[in-house]
Image (cartoon, rainbow over all chains, first blue to last red; front, side, top):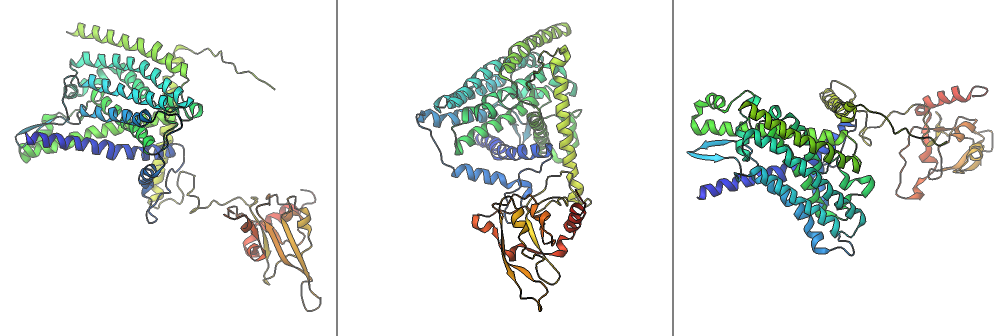
Length: 358
Length: 189
């Protein structure tokens, strides 16, 4: 009982350390530096400690310090309670989704089965999207409570865009569900041990639609209409400053990680290395004993998983700095007229193929 | 003249998918990314003098400006440690912004080489427009546009440079001098 609790707490701590402690701050640096290098610039390199800049990594500390000490401003006529609550509503779902995302398989450590997921829900996939769509409330409330027309417009756009793309997102994963026959993310991950059974090969169209829809859900360029700088100042978080703004920022970066993690699990073989099965790896490290080999296997799998996550983060960043923003009507057209019928067709084709093969 | 953008461009079905265009755009950025990323490495290892990225770490590194560049005007200090300037006032007249202020002094004659010299020579860089007319007007090769352009002060009064601050040894202005002789020496340039 206590051991189980300790294991769960360790997993929670690990996930929090990875997302809030590592990815959220480091991605701010990655975004600046990657965009700079893409555009033939050098990027942030001014913050230094004793004349040592560490490629601009100290900007993370400088940013955090700046956000802590900035004035926490609430505009006149704003709804104080909701204005304060909104960033929390936006941030918490982003963190919560990680409760069901597995970052490794099952390992036999010291005679105990350790499952590298905080909570192995039967409806894990549904849980992710159910919780992720709760974040919309945060954005809508943020815009509405700010007493600012730009914010209100931004939050209206957020609402419509989220509704439009959540439909596609939901229909895209149905194809994956049909192929793997499970909603449990650990099972979907475990089913992709064979390289040719990766979701990308079984659901190629599904992957592209999922990627598009999830970037739209995250409100990043090319779908950043809710916070379009040139049109709406900063959209729904125009009136936010200090750490509240930082929370919106953090929610966005954690959602990038979430998207990358879900894409990895659903379409790119989760924690598996191509052409190397778990049994092979176990037999290689057999000389270390059951616990030893399982421990090595666990580290390899977690490493592979986060490598894949990093690759997808890189792809998302590349997309963000390559493409221009869509117009509002183009976003709606893409969502309802192109992605939705394609997603439906994908389901039909998947069903027909599964029927024909069985 | 007003012109109209033709928005009725007929695109094929494949073009309307935008997939090729998106991939092409990403290829361009990725090429720049990896080119610049690996372009850094020979520089860091010390095998190359220059980075592939041409942006400079500005205050630490400075760009070499072309010789025709007009930075702040400076006064030439000749080999005898005296200013070339004879306080004729031609630059003062040529200056469209009236930023030059000269107080002339006169030597009595025989014992000194120079008859006239500036007692005070002030240029107010807050007013200067860096046109280079002073350099063009000067008959004595005394005032030159240097390549120094980072003049920024917290106090406007500090933008007024006096003679000590303005004087620069002739050796440092050699290139610009040659350029000016070449440029303004023609009968009409």
